[in-house]
Amino acid sequence: MIWIIIFWTSIFLLLYSYILYPALLRILACKKQSNRIVYSENGDMPDISVIMSVYNEEKVLENKINSIYNTSFPKGKMEVIIGSDGSSDRTEEILRKMKEKLTNFSFYHSNIRRGKPNVLNDLVSKAKGDILIFTDANVFLNESTITGLVKHFKNPEIGLADSKMINKGITKKGISRQESAYISMEVNLKNREGLVWGTMMGPFGGCYAMRKNLFIPIPENFLVDDFFLNLNVLKNRKKSINEMKATVSEDVSDMLIEEFRRKKRIAAGSFQNLSHYAGLLWPPYTSLSFSFISHKILRWFGPLFLILIIISNAFIFMRNEIYIYSIYLEGILIIITIIDLIVSRFNKHIAFFRYVTHFFAMNLALSLGLVNFLKGIKTNVWEPTKRNQ
Image (cartoon, rainbow, N blue to C red; front, side):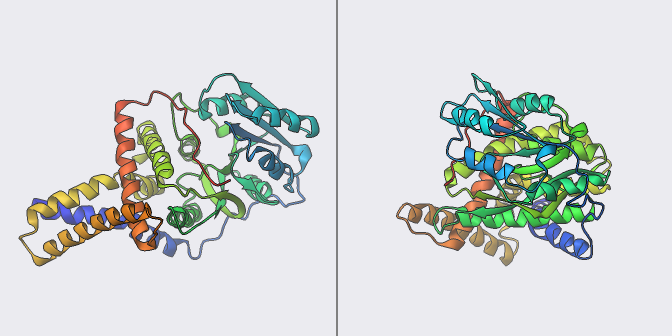
């Protein structure tokens, strides 16, 4: 009986996190309206500081900076501060050239790699704006992105606003289609969390805005800075939301091994944040703890549920035909993953097989990320994910 309970509880928790919780939010958010207390586009917008840490971004940097200055946000109320984290390519040469022709633009360099969070801490200490815009070099803004984010800060309840990520570079090979589908699902889920409770569980990090007075230094060796800052906003009882009209674009990751490496790092950083903000889980009946557990924590422990399903199934498969069929299903899914990995080497790509592979690979990355966290994170320096841009 104990193994039967473990089997069905593990299945329920997986289905709840990936299917039932999103369905519940879809229902709860259907009549909710986005924040209406906003600055008008021609109104008196607050001063902002656009913050960006870069490392060897020569391929995209100039276009990225131009996308910032081509937005409709008043240039007199905007400063751009960029930190080069020990770049060894033409990144700093490009920054010097851009500084000569742009106003309210400054950059700083480090001779050694220090990690993105440490660079961000230094840049924020130099920022003069009331609102901080954090953005990545490979994420491009459109004309209304910054205005769409900053307008929400007229509402004193809003502490953080995230943009909507639009993926480009999707192909039939690799995992770009599967990763894009996952990101699209997450965008809608986070938007609805913001609409219903104001508890959006983490910006995507590519471009988001927050109040400077809610920023706290990111701890040394922390790997996921955006989620750390987001949870601090929620801890201070301010709302975190998503603005679906403030769009940005980015090439989606296409290489399984690259995305696996990124997900493993994010997983380790997620457990760092869980250990730091465990107090937010209590009391468990608040909207913050409910969304934190439902959206994040159950996902992070998904690999454990998968292992428990397989182990418990092995003990109970003789009890009923349904448990025999479940073993068959588990075996089929594993075989599908193996076949997909083999045929992909011959440039053959089956979309459904790739979704199965993507799911198992990302859960494996979660489990290895947990192992790395338990071993202790020695550094927050990492190599950027390779993309087509």
